[in-house]
Length: 104
Image (tube, rainbow, N blue to C red; front, side):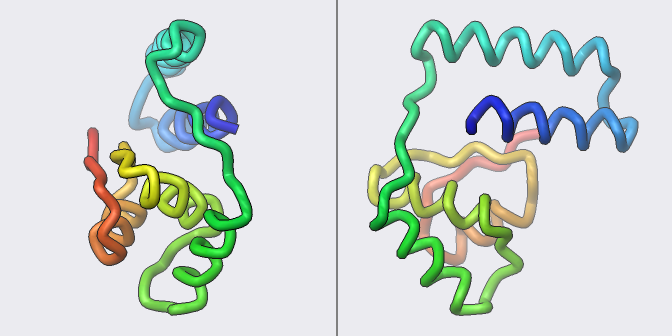
């Protein structure tokens, strides 16, 4: 799923003309390499994380999308920092007390 989310983000950025396809391919290559090198911690979505994501969504206090709520819910109990280039999930992370960093 991590690779799919990253590809989706790159597709959005290239489609909007914010980055060139060549740059997106370089970034994807680097991301794959770092996955292979175990530079990222992969955390499974379990029942508890799913329940927490649903709880946050049901508060209707932020414009969270399902996948963003799941990312926040996985990061929160593990004390992981969510990296996002999207202001919406960053605002939601702030609201729910999830450690995060907005990157550009």
